[in-house]
Image (cartoon, rainbow, N blue to C red; front, side):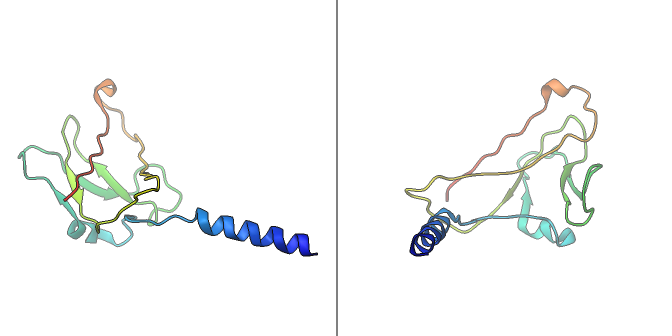
Length: 119
């Protein structure tokens, strides 16, 4: 019985060490309130506009909403602030999901660029 208790304590300690801290999460679950947290760039006047939608493929139409580009052959620029943090000595994992739900005129010229700036 003592060996089982020690094993459970070791597994519990390992899982506590494996927990991660989420520094920024956006799930777009509050309707158009995302527009108060995200800023569309004004650097150029011809950027495309984002719309909030679940798209064509979803499990739950309300919970699976996200931003969608609304115009073909456009650049898009959007940013959001988050609190300062340090991951010194820890790996930094950045995760996002995307789907291509409409036919592009030139699918060979599409892509994403994520840019993270300090300060």
